[in-house]
Length: 183
Image (cartoon, rainbow, N blue to C red; front, side):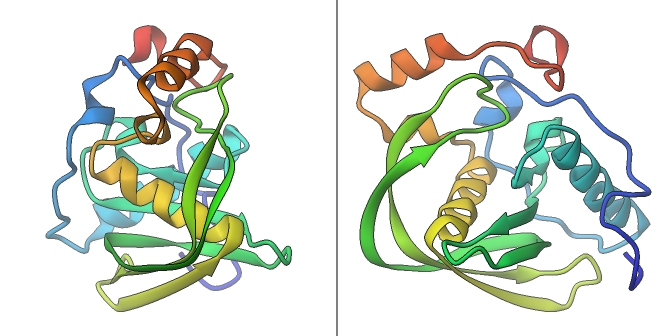
């Protein structure tokens, strides 16, 4: 992205994967090439996230099994956090355990209260290979933890009791941004 450009403005919108798609359940591979293809992926992720009105999106949610996610997410003080992380590692969580509503673009129509830590720190790289460290609190910390879960092959429903998890998965409905037949 060049200074002054809107993230995703040169990207393509991709359909998002639903729970039946194996792409959501597979741990993503490390990125090894910080090249034009990676820059294009970051743009496509932003375009796809904005088209679905999301606040975060992981690469496997559009069927690309690599460790990249983007975000445009407020924290609890309504400060905007905008960026991307390549090969993220959740290196620290802390603060209170907060039970709050969580939803996901890959589980459209469903929402559940999920326990997450109120603070999270993620380290990784930007699309050029420069190190980044992102610290979040409140809703933004929830977003960082949620996207890291995706890259490990998980969804928020995995953090629920079996009964609540089944209820969430039954509530999932295809959305305009969903891939046909979940893949």
